[in-house]
Length: 110
Image (cartoon, rainbow, N blue to C red; front, side, top):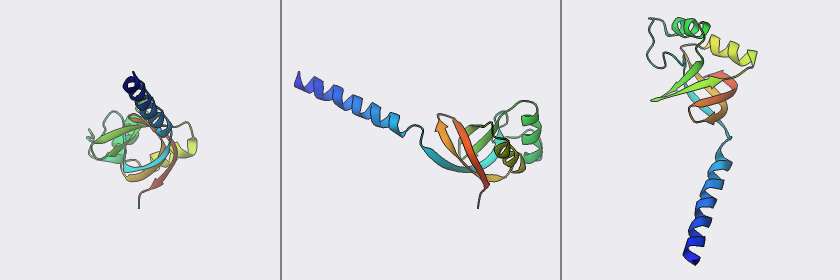
């Protein structure tokens, strides 16, 4: 009985610590793209392709190695910066939830 109680306590401890880590602001660096094309654009110009796809309703995305994160924001200044950096490397600051980042800030990657 004592072992079962310890096992349950350990599982709860891991779950709580995982939940507390969620929602942490992080910075990701990668290439600004769109969620439809990801890392493989259909047009020759990455920036043009990204802008066209976003204009047709696709979300901005960030390609980080083999991962593609959908970027979400309502802030016009952030959207303007993503448009400016379309097809380029950028540092995106925000809260990741699975494959989506709630973006608070975008800067050109150095």
